[in-house]
Length: 459
Image (cartoon, rainbow, N blue to C red; front, side, top):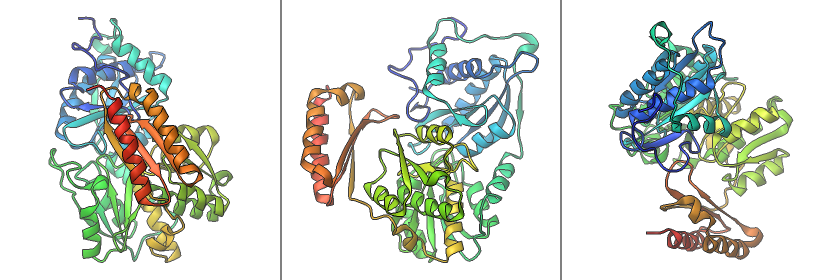
């Protein structure tokens, strides 16, 4: 076996999806693959002159398989000569922040975000804590798939490992110092999804002045995202009503995004949160060029609300890294996704659910207005999303039958709605999204398209 060989057949297709590499842990995402990706990433991203070893920051979420993959990633990095700083269980944005703060050459987060516990993933950050462009991911994949692998020093050239004990405190302090207004007087329920933010999220909000009720904050390695967090809002809604809270915040397993509910338990999604923050930032004079970066998934209601407010939208492909790339290229100050990934470059190099929640509550505290009133600036057009399992998502999306069905659906809706069909970046799914004047029409069109997509997939 070649020095960099994975030792088993690699998964078909591109390794990297919308947000790193994901798969069923120990089946699709094996320790061998994790080690190969880490070694390849070190060889591609670490360009020092050799006088000092490259530095890598490694963090993880609390799922059981993250312990196994952490060991493999550390082995891959040290085999490439990198000095590894392990930060333990921390949210993804904390790993990005520490990558920048510690002047590391790369950062690695082991997490499958909102995916169920059996899955896991690897997210990579370049120097400065920035997510990788497609070209660097492709270069890393070429090394992983090559017969040569990555250079492996011996003797004193092998990397060493240290543990950072104050990573959580550094991150908490950074977040609390970011808010323009304290949160005194607000009661918030925080659903931590039994994930990476179970300790830090409640502490951040308490230090900022809020009265905090934490739920699903006892990770045991198995219960991450299990009927809780941003993909299952029912426990949060019930707790907000029970505790008579001003709002509820639901994080996902690695806390890089959030959704909220108001005092009555009504969902406030990423589009509404971005609208609230955009208006607050424009009022403060910090919304650069009066522009907001969104993806194609953002609801038409956000577009109409921002147009009415005189705020322009810049649109990207789905994936917070595309939002991030546009923010960096254009020098803009706010962007995100309907799913709750919100990016504020003044304070973070990636989406940060805890940070977003802080600034959302700061707006509530500063204005004295309830979340429902602030969110009402956006009237959401009914939107239906259907996920269709397929064998080959790229082939199905490009099939003539599917293309014709999309064109027919667009003609049916005309100017009253829109259709978006795209392959998932992380799963073997085609995502069918339809917006229409009524939920019944949106559902009808989405179901018809989903049936065509399903029929176009080989059994």
